[in-house]
Amino acid sequence: MEVKFVSKEAHDSFINNNTQFKLIILIIASRGETYDMFIKCWKAYMSLYPDVKAFFLFSDPDLPCDVLITEDSIINKHPECNIPGILIKTIEAMNLCNEAFKYSYLLRTNLSSFYNIPRLLKYLDSQSRTNYVGSQFYILPNVPQKQEEIQFVNNYLEKKLDDKFVFLHGAGFILSNDVVENYCDQILRNEPKVARTRGVADDIAISIVLYNFLSPATFSENGFYFPPEFRSLHEHKYQCRKLIHPNEYDNEKIFHVRNKKDDSISDNSIEARRDEVLNYVMQVRYYYNMPNFMSEIGPIIMTKHDLKNDFVLFDHDKEYDPLYLNAIPGETDENIEGEDSENIEEKKDDTDNQLSDEIVDLNTSLTLSEDIVFDESPQLFA
Image 1 (cartoon, rainbow, N blue to C red):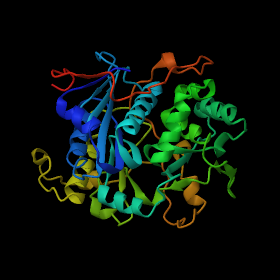
Image 2 (image 1 turned 90 degrees about the vertical axis):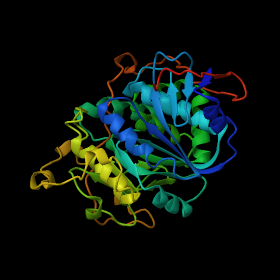
Image 3 (image 1 turned 180 degrees about the vertical axis):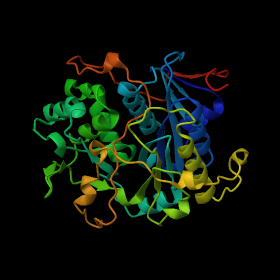
Image 4 (image 1 turned 180 degrees about the horizontal axis):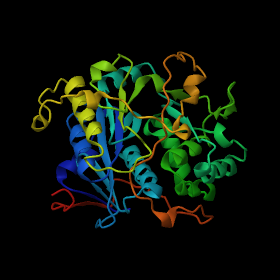
């Protein structure tokens, strides 16, 4: 695999970095007017902490190499798409970070998610450094549009689980370093069964491979099927479904805020996602004490119309965290909110949608001391 860097500085910060990072953050990203606003918000705070390293994950089929690395981005040579693009760029970034960095945890998230990093680091101080898998967890609803994924899961695990299979939410999951390494090792073996996971959504694909090496999954009292290492982050997340100031929902446990009003809507224009962008700007201003952040927007004044919460979930979107409901030790079942499932806002690559018996080469093994080329005049981020 040929890896290029946009500059010597990007190379040295990636290759010659001896920092013991507590957290690596990988942010699924793409370009567009709305996405660029979220990127600007992320950039305001993601590099403030010396023991945290964050990268946007992009795809570009026209790259002159397999991977191009900047100071804050890892770009993969592949079309920008949901399936299998998000999974592929996540796997390649995980492999690269495993080769380059020493770290304790890895967070995989997306552009519309805001994180209070100090609170997250404080939370991780109390968690296991090994065999840790944290997320808000979801199940596949037993509805017609999910039958293909349900059948895939049942075949993969050789169990008729239907809506009892528990998986990580793609908007934010945290893995300890050893879990990331074990996951990447499963991928690098390139066994046909694992390779076929590229035909389903990335959060399901990643979750189901974890079942290969974590402790054996069992059925909970409520009938849900998951490994004992899974730890619910339900009480640490808030989802903004309307324009709302952070002081209306904030509490000391929350470190993840998802800015998505309705996961079933695919309109990502700035007009359609105005409130979500404004929510993110307010979160940066509020949590990071940056009152002048994006001052060109001016004060964010909420009218009575803005404050009206008239969003109603469809029945098939009324999901919840099955682990949170199961009351994992140290957690309660109070104040449970319905959450709808992840729907990443990229066009689907139909050519890779069908499950196949073909062995797919996802081997991205790399010795970082080899195949390194500097590209001093990149065209991607002019």
